[in-house]
Image 1 (cartoon, rainbow, N blue to C red):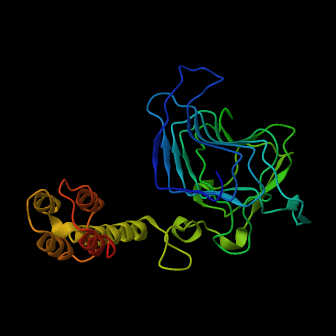
Image 2: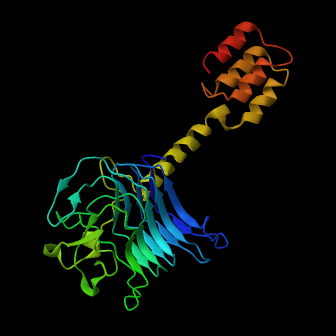
Length: 296
């Protein structure tokens, strides 16, 4: 599934009886690329494991942006994802390569084990940039068990390709990294933007872009407009009373008068009426039948 947008949904993740090989997952993206996931709420009221799981992610820039995760063991997980070959050095290291998966501006609350896990492969590096206020990653982490280090902000296996993580320092350090593997993840504070302000630094992108907008409200408005148009046109079909026309077809009404009754609705005769006219038990003269069929 490529070029998809998963926007403004609610996922209550179920459990699979704690079967490790088949855990509960809210959104699973396998072999997908060029997608955007925004403004979704992932939670579990009955033991679900994963919020969003990404496997074999394509090399386009893919966004997991401004979603809300709560009460999940592992909120976001990526495995076996790839990048394209274009990269360049930055300071501090590692390399910059903004293709691939970008996890930005998500809210993590009460994760059981991990907020963001990268188990194999690589994700976009760095996560975010320090160019403008809206460019850092700025995920808001759970940060609920710093004393025992039982909760990972970002968990990475040793084989994961190292990446940088850009963030705007915030009060209570909600955007900073507390528990992570420093040999894989390099925190990059964007100090010139501090302090973090969620409204400014993590705005919704719904309804932005060219045209009249692609947000939920704009889409609903278009759907309502189309429905109004459909309803208006529907009233013109058979003059809004198909059965009345069928009754005339099945009567002994003279051919000329029946033609006038059908064509009174212009070119809005339904297939039902046209088929009934053709199959009429006492067939109409070919000339009259042609005058009815051709305009429709």
